[in-house]
Length: 441
Image 1 (tube, one colour):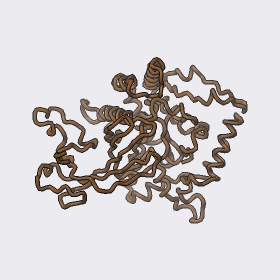
Image 2 (spheres, helix red, strand yellow):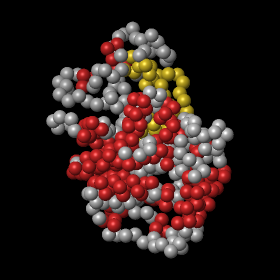
Image 3 (spheres, one colour):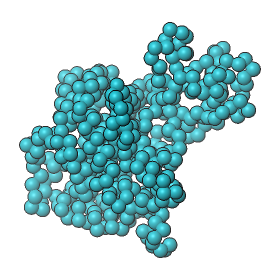
Image 4 (cartoon, helix red, strand yellow):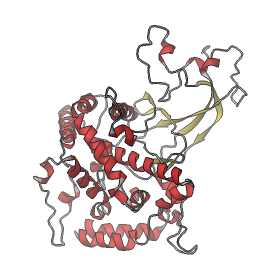
């Protein structure tokens, strides 16, 4: 088009943060100067293996001070002036809406500002705990397609577990390699889990289904993620920092995920930063309890499966994780009005069809219901209702009736956190989720 690529601000989170009070000059002065500029696209791109087949694009970057040089090469290969690369994911959703991902990133940025405690004097506990959400840029090109900033140095939770092994068991032991847990081609594992589910969904015996899930799945496919931190962070200080980062970031995502009803938390939608141990969530199409509408409803508030608990160390959920989760929920509840003011326009936006409601009246009712649920959670109410309790009649001597009083009781922050953890780690809940979610890892 006659305009150099270096004239454009790169669509990454760091570059799209406008500095206040600098708009008197040119528009480009409002953006951080430390962020490199794009010089040229690589000729080749990588097609990812997920169902949507998104494309990973590489862009060569130069320092911003060199961006206006007329002698700068625009060759689609690395040159001496390059200081690094930027990576983006070009994605087209088959059924989802990337505008929701973009809005959730905006919401997360607001939460990060609340955690940072801007305007407060002196360091506080939030700052000491380094609570924050890793965010990334989402640029929508249409409602179903867009450009996503690639989160560098990350691997999916499934990949991390697959590459880990337990050195304390014999080399020939079935419990040594994490790849055995993540091998979805293992027909015995799949069939065993489905048989456990059938005990509940077809025979109404949740107690026996839970017992068999523990005996046949969890005992035979033991967690190994504790060892990933030992094997990848050799010094005691690096190990402690990485595990602390994992615990705190997991806690923050747990709090935020529960508040906005974030679902579809399978092991490919949770990433681990291989350099810092930080947990990063991606794919925010399934929000506002949409996961409860799936054929196999996601009946847990967030993902806290055996390997994630194993990674927290000997104290499990009772150590740093619970402390960070209490602090996160406390901060969110104290800033309830701010969060609702951000979420209400999102929920009431008729352009973004949140629950595929064809009727405008149904859409309005759905938005009101979602706002009420979020407000309830910010008031300490655990209002995540399990739809299976209405679909399946229990035959094991227990009632499946919902306790309306329990679903409306306002809990303290500590009480709410304990309830959330209890539901997230409950084997009764884990045995009910979709097999592709792989609740044993």
